Length: 238
Image (cartoon, rainbow, N blue to C red; front, side):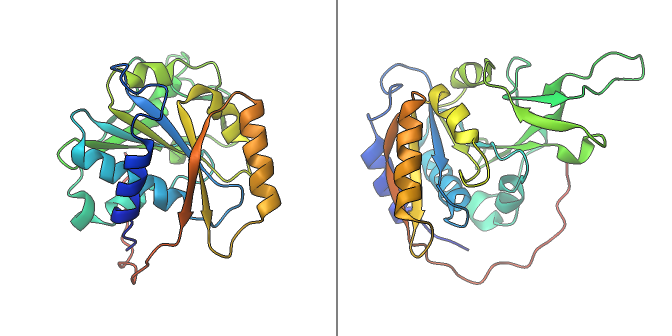
């Protein structure tokens, strides 16, 4: 178990009023990313979403935008003492839009294309104050791939239902997803950790985020306190 409650409370205070959505009445979207793998972005994003949800008047959404390695929902399910029991599997799209596109499209028994939104689900936690998404990648057909869809209305649609949207992006050293997502969110938080990554890579990522129109809100130094992990258990998928 990783406890970043104190660190995330400090981050919430630092970011309060710092995003473009502050005071606008719509949910703000924050993208968490690192320059290199292994810096703990998923842990920081998950803990930040949990802390936001504890004080939120509207739901907080934790969106797993790593389309190749979906881990957030499983990680939350493995910590019931911190996140509570999960609610039922639900659609993660308020209007049928999603932030990715599947290629090739799957067809139903009648030969009609299956909507991409069918592959994105969410489960609620903390009495429905926190919703965690998952791409149902186990349903993908051989050769079928999911790619980020930059022109999606998903983020705008989700903002009307959420107080905050926390987006967990893959590390920049293995995916350019952050450059596609950064212009669509209200701000980017760069995660760095002790003994991982390189200064030059972090500076380069900051520059590229700004060049595509992203707004870097700050940096989190992740020096987490880690206890022995709980025994892994099989997770039921939706």
